[in-house]
Image 1 (cartoon, rainbow over the protein chains, first blue to last red):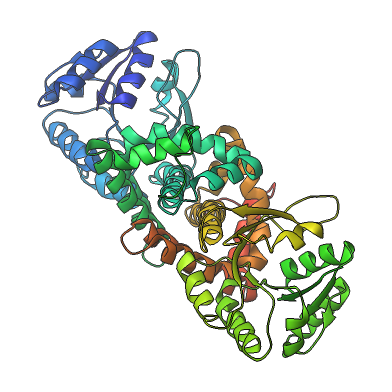
Image 2: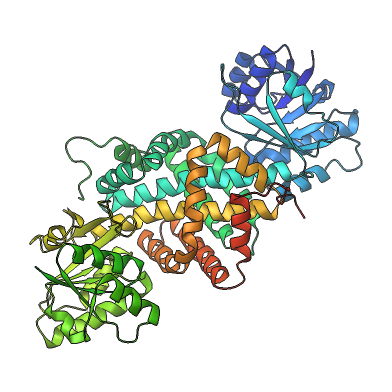
Length: 286
Length: 286
């Protein structure tokens, strides 16, 4: 069975590793300088810690990290690839197509194949086929190995960057919507309109109400990662598109939320209170 | 039966008038300087054109206009109220609470009651109870007259501005979402990812896909009105809230869309093409 290397043992990286391992693969990773929590998560998933140079012994190297770290990981892989012939490298992170191209350019002249990937959906869980892994620039179907080991893969016809573009657009809608919801629920809370807003949403937009009730609490621990992702979306849209400003605002919003999650949790409490209003009328304007 | 005056005979104003008239009311309006289209719409709805001063003969004066015109209408009503004792004035427009307060301040000293209202939902249609008309600052229940004539009214406990705040939050989520969807579908179209985005949305976020398919085409003729509404939402959020930037971007986005709707319709065509992809693969990147 094939060997993979995965750089990044976060919630997504470790769950992807687990899925591959369950299908008989060996998954190498490099844990140099990682936190105790990450080391435990990697080992629990069954990942095999190796030195950075040994990552090249895999048949595919995957990068699954927060978008702000994607370039640093590519630098590391380009560095080890310069010393030993390396397998194809797939960046699976939420980055703009231009960032993807800059990232691939680090491998120029190394002979290493670089593929553009994107993960849509949450981490793999037992009994579900998702998430979907989109790959572009993969004429030789090097990503087939992932399919052979239990992952759902879709190859896109477009060139390098097409998978990243798809991810930007999807995340812009999906995560952007969560940002809009959080921002407006907080504003309603500040202005004493939370209770009536929640009631009106439940009545006239029940789908929206349900989605926000679930997605906003799920967002708290991820908000810090979404800051760079929103900046990537703004870069993707480009200065000429007025929507780039929307995502600059989203980045700032998630940055504030991330600071709150790590800090006083004042905003988190306000959001939680709206989602589960008390019976004593806690929503009434002070 | 009561007399109302409605300033504004757009899609919403004329449909609200029609509902009131069907319940036996007389609805006065002032058509001085209005377009031929507006005059026809008002007369079709059964509204009675009068001179501006005669509007004070109604038992309630309602303002139902695009948000950018709300202040001008209030000035007009304040002006006629200064000459003749006037009935309560209800602003039903999508404006920020601060704008509402500035608008109400124009009536200071006139003795005219000013109420803050907001309409949530589309124009009244036969057989449906909506939209909901929220009213705040109405301790004397002057808005009960509207309920007596077939409209669904909810009075909010908050002071003047509470209904406007609710409207800002609701519109921020609902219209903001349509803006996000349009922006990302256009970006997908530019980068050759439209077809895969549409397929992924249909599969993993079918509610979102359905809502965008319906709401985006419905938005075209309203985009020009939403520009000022998004600016009102940015003002409502205030400079200290990073989400204000989101809505400044939204205002610019809808401004570009509105110009396109009136002009070359290039963006409209792109959006339509994504919603109904041709069988010949029109989505392929040029």
